[in-house]
Length: 444
Image 1 (cartoon, rainbow, N blue to C red):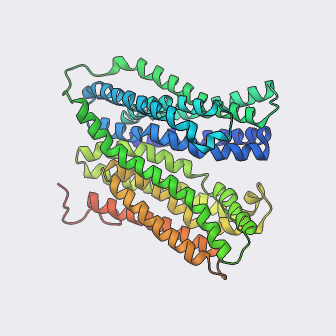
Image 2: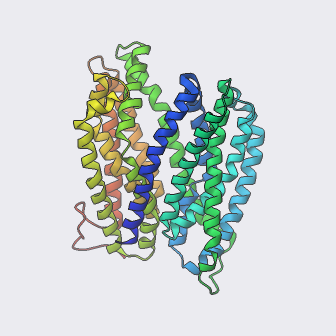
Image 3: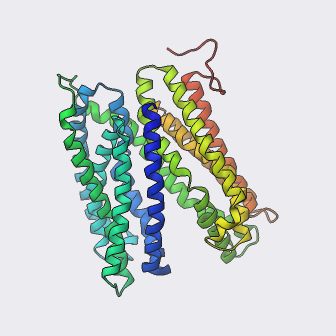
């Protein structure tokens, strides 16, 4: 089994176990925090994740791509410059956070110490990003997989022990404990990655590396990190807007605000929770594909690039189609785990194209990043959201369509995204849309 496939299956196995642990974590939180506390927890998570995205700066992607494109003798030298850059970035973000966090409204609704705990989260995320990028770049996916498992396992263990040992009188204190546990588990992951990295220092090849200046390393890292971070932030903003747009369209179609909220909840909280469960495999493909494609592209190995594209599409078909069929056939018992609702069953049935094309779009996005076409990925995403949002608003606001119109817009948007990604990749590596070599290849 080649490195790419081995790394993918290792990551997928760990991701599956992590998803199951995440389910248990949410059960513990729901029981201990209650409906109100869970609502507060879910309301602050997007802010924490946005801060993590900025602190992360998509460095795992850029560093892994950078390392696979250069000789191993240069890795230690490059990582030194990357760590210096991250240190400067962390100091800048800590200073900015120190002055800005007290004025962020969401922090006013929670324990006064939460904003400082989140501030401590910044260096943990930044330095973890460098180490994750290193292990991805050297194709050490087992360490990435174990770190993902450790994060969820530690979070579940601490939550279970603390909530069993202590009874929190106020929701505020219980919520503070939950946030501390989330951030503490990331700290344990950083420690684990650091220990593994230090233990492998003697494996770095000896010899004088080609000296690159810190400015060159930063420029190359940022050429990938900035547009990729921009893509993540754009997705976060668009995903934050989408619920309000859907509910507004439903109200215009004739539903009351309460009914619009209920129908959106059934779609997003039930149908989409079930439909996106198999996406852990797609995200495992994403992590494994970026360094593999980057290395093949740096070597001008068109055969390898074509093979990677074929393998990623074949794997997606092998797990995606059976998953969609099972969700479609067992829609009723699956949705009944949440609520007994015929509407939820219908939404899960109607959204099967959205889930399937999403499974394809994720590894295709990784492939584009590996080819250095990050800006194309961003443009594709923008266009897909423009089309999707336009259709959601127009068709969703029609009295005789409502949620059917919303789902039409969502399915069309993700189909467009997948096709744009796929066509761009085929043109970039000069293969036909059926993944066969062209008679007169333009590859140079």
